[in-house]
Image (cartoon, rainbow, N blue to C red):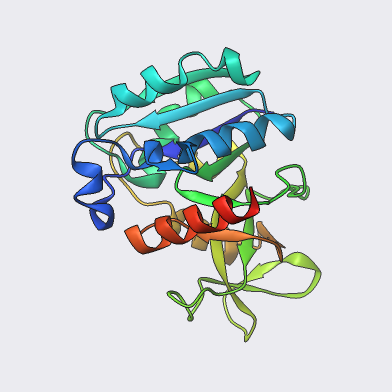
Length: 222
């Protein structure tokens, strides 16, 4: 199975750090943030990787190359202007192939086991969910019984930025910029989406404060 790392975001909340370097290349404990993702994916058996990029994306290609030194095979999906999550994945579909594929945000840090999410028969998506962090207490999706995502309920969790998708989720899409969320809500409405609750480490490294916190965490553990 192939995997995609989303790395095309502009990183506005990280400015001015991201004025001269793309957010996925921000250094944390001595190496770029995105490198942790590449290494974890390879350890989980995902060696065929696709990375999209836009803002200063050439720097990402220069930093990671073809992936050989990580034990990976990396191909890139340059966007020029960022296409949002849905549009970025749709553009990369020819590189991802006809089967299900994993997608992860490039600006998270976690110990998620990327082998754990599974697509049930007939499903279009399985989302990895985490307990709601302080900056997002309202959550995103409701995880119901038997690992099914549903439209209503009390058990609302936060989308971890990691999902397993069938290409059929994008069957009616057109090229261009569009978000992923409406496609996911439609799949949930159709009863075609599952969820996996990750209870371990997870951080959305979206601000300089969280970047500094992760730096402290990794430095202390080292």
